[in-house]
Amino acid sequence: MLETQEEDYRTNPLPLQEIQEDIALPETVLLTTPPLKLSKPETRSSLRALTLESVFATLFYSIIGGALLSNFLLDLGAGPVEIGMLASIPQLVNLLQPFGAYIGDRLQSRHWYSLWIFGLSRVLWLILVPAMWLGGSFQLAGHQVVQLTLAIIWVTQVLESLGRASFLSWLAVLVPQRLRGRYFGFRNSAVSLTNLIGVPLLALVVSSWPGGRLQGYSAILVLGIVLGIISLGCQFFMTDVNPKLVHVTHSDIGEKSSIGAIFSFLKEANFLKFLLYSGLWSFAVNVSAPFFNLYLLDNLSIDVSVVTLYNSLGAGANLLMLVFWGKLADRVGNRPIMIVVGILVALTPVLWLEAGTAPIFIWVWFPLLHIIGGATWAAIDLCSGNLMMSVTPLRNQSLYFAIAAAVPGVTGAMGITLGGFIATLTNLGGLPGVFALSAVLRLAALLPLVVVREQRFCVFG
Image 1 (cartoon, one colour):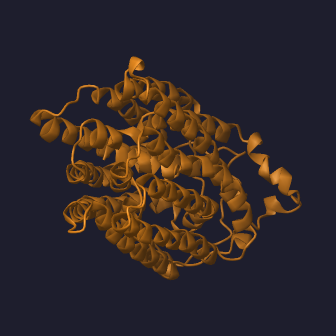
Image 2 (cartoon, helix red, strand yellow):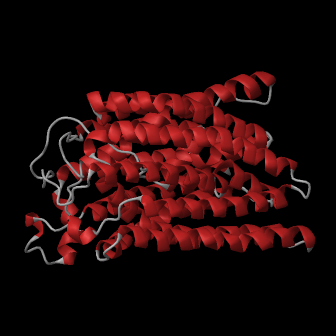
Image 3 (cartoon, one colour):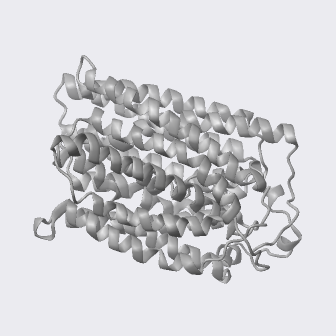
């Protein structure tokens, strides 16, 4: 689960979780009365639909990412460079998020914008299915399928990057601030339970498919696309939001310059401190994050079904701890939890230095690492989005979300590139050297978080 949680953080630097802490800063908290107020029935139905949407989407993303996709590419002959590209593509395309936020804020429906963006990106994965079957029937070169897969990832990630900030802004309105800790703790528990049960079953299908693992992956890919479309269907039961109404505030009257709005974040000192932390943290995490699955599947030659079993153990730990972290965050704030737990997350890669293929590693050490990773990343995932929402003003909120994703995206891609380069140099220790370097960088990245101030009473919806 350690690599699964870290991959989630990479592909979605703002993992759809939220809450807050103490002092409300006047330069950040622009509104105390939100311009859009949902009724209790609208809120209840929206939150139910959002939970179901996340469960189906989780299954889709677990199929087109994580250990299943890594194993598929390794079967085709991919190496550290291709695995690094797989991880760096979602990071690089985050640069487009401000552009997507700009477009989304000028439309009249969060729902329909999300439907078109994410619907098209998920359907495009169908292109890969016949290529995998042709690979088995007509000896289509494995490297050609790898290149096609990476091309599809490029296109779909570009599309999704245009919709992520808008979708997160939609959630900021749908989920009341006072419920964010409890709700997202519950929602993430549902996601973890889905991973706990679904991913090992999917891996088992791939490993035991009569026509081979390539055709097995193509079968579950079709299933994943169907589940991805179902998740979009759940959005029809979520109350739509017109971003133009959300952004109509007294503070916005007279602010006509789009360029001025884009660069307004430079005036928010607290947001810039958070941006520095998130950029450094993304760099440090991504130096090693893409390579844990590679280490297990390639270096140690552990079967994909066992690796997904590890991930499920991490998902179980994540499931058990999420509610605890959510309640604790509501009481003490997100930043203190991120600092304390962040130290544990920073030291975790060092524990991978003691690894091997002896039974004690296969059945005790690696499961323990994934359980620790699942428990600690539950806190990081839950609190990082909450803190980000706490330090951003309501005005031009989706633009701030986009910038908060774009900066870690660039630094994350840089981290992946560095990690992939070091992994190929045996004189620098290979992957164990990557893990040790990542631990040091993670500890250093926590320093800016100490000076970030968290607002507890900033109301978004």
